[in-house]
Length: 166
Image (cartoon, rainbow, N blue to C red):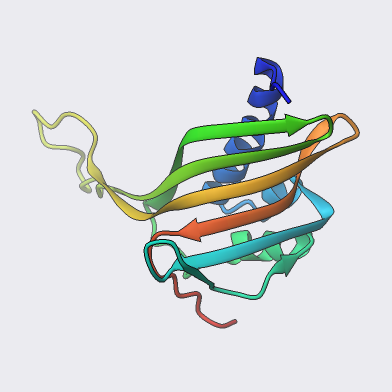
């Protein structure tokens, strides 16, 4: 079915809210994007076209809320993540949709402000940005009460991912 520009924008906006919530580690905001019966699956690439699960499927918004809120180790002061998504493709069939997108996750480290301020002549952004993850999102959505919600979200990481137990 042809996708209207507005429908495509609404579907892509769900992913935009997902990555922004993830970067803020706001598990409640991310979980609110899911249906009650949603499933999230995380994979690591093992070959050119093969992947293996990182965790058992996460069922419902509760486990995704916990994963986003507690992802990894606590970040040191001045360290954040920043997702960028690209090459979005959207298909819509009445009240269901599929979104495919590439992603890159960056780590940003703010430069430490000297105790007595920046030296005269200092200018520009102080810190570093480096890519730490990349891959693909394959996301199925359903329109619920007029709003798009995630029903199945698959994250295909280009590299191995280790999630500590706990």
